[in-house]
Image (cartoon, rainbow, N blue to C red):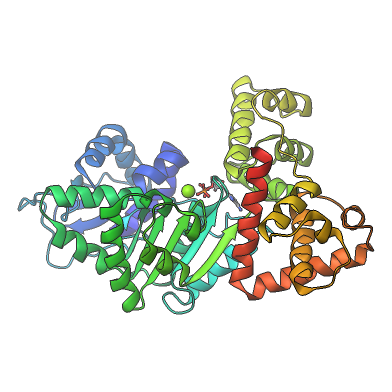
Length: 444
Ligand code: ADP
Ligand code: MG
């Protein structure tokens, strides 16, 4: 009979819409017992909400696909309910295998399939794929960082979905650092710390989003440190995300910082123009809209730096056009997104030269000179690489600004730094730090 539930899901999705479906229907666990279908939900709030808003549509969808209306009950899952005899499960319920974590929840749409890969996130993406292949072995912990709205949460959800798809019995916790803290506080208050610890230390995979939130929260850090150590010692995979690299998280205990630094650190950069076009086109396709390239291009150009803003612009355009029942047209799109978006910040080769020379305690003159001492050539190559990546300048124009060199020198420098970056996580971190220094200088 659970097959009926699975069969009803597509209809249900149509009836409630994608967002409601992901939030309210997907988390439901369908179990068959003597009384019919028991739909298990995570909390009382959830139970009330689903009962009030979706129960009739659930019945209809089931009736449509099964040809009869089965008995359906919505109950709070045993672990969180004060169990009553009626709610207790029969001896061996046949559970529909679900891809969801034991603690926390995933966003259904955030999968590897819907993640656009390009230069800016390739390293992070490949690292996430490796972790999904061999959790707990190769890269532990996996620390992913990058600016707001650049796809960290998407990528760890994709990783989580993939891990669960590969092995649905794997027990996983996937939640924000803030949720971790709130759960801890509740457990403290209810004098249930032992249960809290057991719960987290038993998982096979722990994914904690936005760990920068732990800054200054000593008690939570302390608790997390022990959880981390237990999992790590048992070769369980830990995945962390943050908006900055470990060393830049202020008020993070040193011992925790060195744990974070002990694995693989990968960062996500802001996407290039081409990637933004690919992303916005894909996002539109997910919503069933075939976005014309001219419009994808305007959106990619004009919305703010993060992908979230790009998505916001798309949503605004699609909403307005569908409300007014008009087709997408270039001029209208321009009008729609012009007023709310600030001009993109321009990063100059000069500002990169200043940042890099300051970082390495050199003068800009040295950086541009033909001095071939290693203490100067390495920073110079880095500055050339960053100029290419961040300032969007051509090879010849960069060469010109580095003391009138040949452009092949710049190309060579970029390749050299890229190779280093791919082979050595430290170089990756260094570049990331410099990039954020450059950006903060520009935005200052
Ligand atoms: P972060 O956690 O880094 O702040 P999110 O993962 O929440 O960012 O991403 C913000 C939005 O942008 C999400 O809707 C996400 O799906 C989308 N997004 C970001 N990067 C990509 C990408 N490379 N491909 C597809 N969508 C992306
Ligand atoms: Mg996030």
